[in-house]
Image (cartoon, rainbow, N blue to C red; front, side):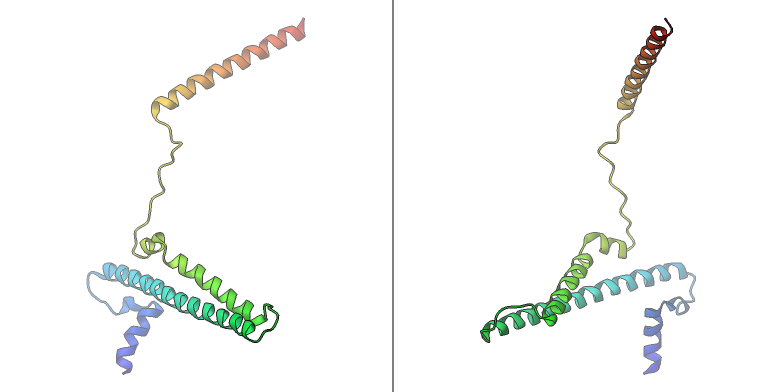
Length: 151
């Protein structure tokens, strides 16, 4: 039994590179890294979903219990804990279900989108001409003010 568990434990602890002694070690290491990150995302997703369902159901049960007992409604400490557990697990669930998270786990890095403000060569040339014109006008004004002050 231990012979079967040892490779599995070494896989999750990060020393799976010692399992493969073939020429394609780099490929197998990348495969192991991607499988490990996918396993972590899937485990996080399932765990967050379970905690979300448990927290929400316990919160609803506490609220329904207060209404059944004809008590005045108040948030008890356990209700705050259930609400916090529900909100945190919902956040983890949303993060694990994002497209970017899955692409990063598979090894696909998304390149930043080209900025819409990026100008073409013609726009850059026109902008340089306008800036040159503005600087020339400013220097003429300064010269005119200097002459007026000198007089």
